[in-house]
Amino acid sequence: MKKPLLIYFIISQFLVCSFAQSLPETGISGVYEAMVATKDPQYVIRYFGEFGYTLRDSAAYTAAQAKELYGVDSKLTAYRLQNGAIDAHGLLRVLVWEKPLGEGVGYVQPETIGQRMAVMLTNDIVRLMDVYKIERQNGEKWLPIEPIFDDPLKIKANQKVTFFNRPVGVRETAVYGDFFTHVFFQRYGYTINGYGTITANAPLQTSEFTHHDFVIKGDIDLVTKYYSEALGMKPEQKEHSIDGDWLKGPKQVFQMPDGYSHDYRGFVSPNNICGKLKFFAPRAPKPDRSAHQRIGELGMTLHSFWTPKLQMVHELVQKQGIKTSKIVKNEFGENSFVFVGPDGVAWQIIERKESQHKPTTKLEFTFLKN
Image (cartoon, rainbow, N blue to C red; front, side):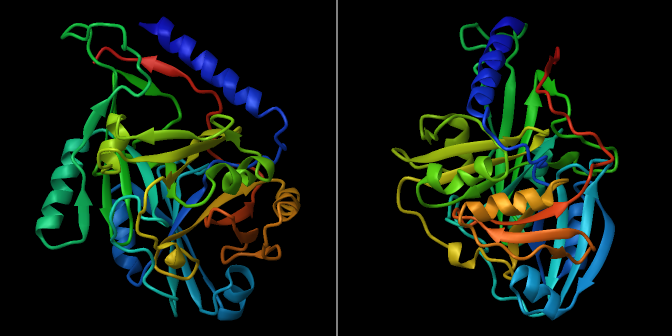
């Protein structure tokens, strides 16, 4: 059973490395934080506590400071949450704008332009679905998608799967919401060291954010090239691929109608296998809420990376023709700058020498007999 998987990953790692030979060594992390703006921080902090997140810090910014860094003329209060001991990636920052600019992308159908999704590993995806179905019955704005099992790596593609030769793969789902959209996945038959850590204090048996999905528009290769050229992230492949209704997982999670497809491109930091980015550009007309995907509106409108080479990254981003803020201290006193990429994604880059938790940089699979 191990040989086909090893061959697959030797090939995939060779391809990623071959595309990444000329990448700048920026020291960039995986996605450090997802940031969600809300009018009710107490609820959001309590809500994410059910996923294992705890409050680690809070800070405030004057309107003048927020205008300089974020371009938003509003007082800001921020709360930083962390899941367990994982501080290298997968954190959450809750933003409270005194004068929010709008309601954000909000509750919309799958693959609406401007949509953002944060992904977690779980030990019990069925329980999660039961919880969200009840919330929907209670009148809350949640759209839970029925989980689907797939073997996307085709580990046992040429084998007969039986009771004794059990399937290996993931069961995944999405839960589309008003202030936040989740993707959950559960592994069967294997684990990946360092890719999702579930702690005992997570009532819903979920990990930190392992990766992040972005629904964008435009030429996906052109508008995302800065992730490699300026941020030093490794592309999964030289150019984008096309996913469509012939793939079980994407068809279900994104609720693809027959005959539908989208362009896909992914990136991973050379310094962390976690905190990956996945981009999707619909190839058929979809609602466009990207005008509300801006810093200062409600919902998930901003993400962050950290790097020990902040000045270098600042210069590389500017060389891409991307407008940035000045390097100033953010509300937590960290040197940082903010920009919006040509893909419409807003980023804060934070200066940080290292994390206490050492991220995993080598992708390794361990098979289980379950």
